[in-house]
Picture 1 (spheres, rainbow, N blue to C red):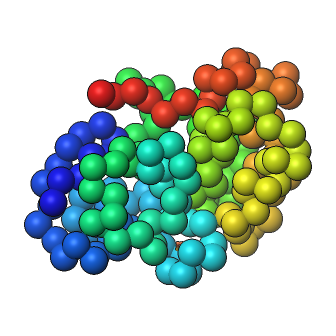
Picture 2 (picture 1 turned 135 degrees about the vertical axis):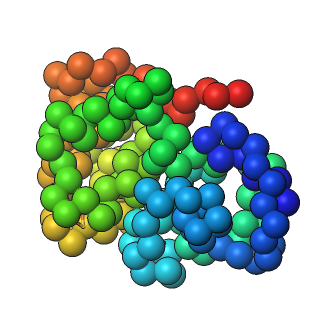
Length: 166
Ligand code: FES
Ligand code: FES
């Protein structure tokens, strides 16, 4: 089966029903995507599939063959953090860090769809991403910063873009 992950096409010899989370972590070694609940309730496993946030823990790998998959490892360009990652750094968002890859992927998907989201739109988009450390206020601030609405250094619109590695 052919999978395109972070702009690279790879051949996987796996059970088509294998969940994308395990294909990414155990087969491709992309361990930035985390396992939390396994039932699409916590958001820790979020990746971007064809521009939209997707819970990889409930996504059979065969269902995303031919799609563009982006993981946290695919956001930085030439060693420079993606604008959303930079906003996360500037706002010092992470505590334990476990949920943060999923949070960032949901934020990137949101900003791709809505470059300047309102606080309500941010709350709605991020509501399925849980953080046991309670970093929600910092996440909200980082999304606003990444969208250029909070005096952040990032131009609106640029933040949501998934790198074009085609
Ligand atoms: S591990 Fe996928 S949503 Fe929790
Ligand atoms: S930073 Fe610890 S769970 Fe979110």
